[in-house]
Amino acid sequence: MTDVKVECVRGNIASQPDVDAVVNAANASLLPGSGVAGAIHDAAGPGLAEECRSLAPIHPGQAVISSGHSLPNDHVIHCLGPVYGVDEPSEELLADCYRNALLLADRKGLASVAFPAISTGVFGYPIAEAARVAVRSVINVRPTLTSVRLVRFVLFSEQDLSEFRDAIEAYG
Ligand code: ADP
Image (tube, rainbow, N blue to C red; front, side, top):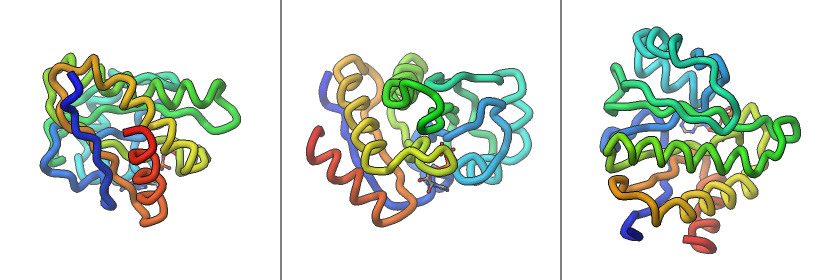
């Protein structure tokens, strides 16, 4: 199946009401933190951290799913990205995040998933490289998806958006 739309927008991952799941750029303990994890936990409310206690810890490249609590989405998929230059091979581990999140969403019968730029904040992954890895990973898994029909990348800055746009043009 190749009729899966891949798009990118500038915005806040915690304000994507039209998708079934948003992806959290989580830490290993799945606790509220800064950046994406902070925004998601703030919007979801304390029930999310409570549910996450039984799902943690996770390892780089892994994805686990919880409900969305007070978020406008039914689910949150939590991924632990690699710390750039520390968790190796970084490229494979980052690609695993996107692939495992989409396979999990597909197994749950979800139709739409929104991703932030995993690992490109505190974890230090250069945005242009991360955009290429993310888009290639989604394109590679796309033929195996039976339920997911929309993959959205949500970028915080105009510059990050433009890197993802370039990558989608190159590989999409
Ligand atoms: P990591 O620890 O995986 O690097 P971060 O949360 O620190 O994750 O950042 C990942 C990326 O998400 C960064 O590019 C950051 O600018 C961006 N970001 C931070 N907050 C949000 C948000 N609310 N919505 C979308 N992207 C965000």
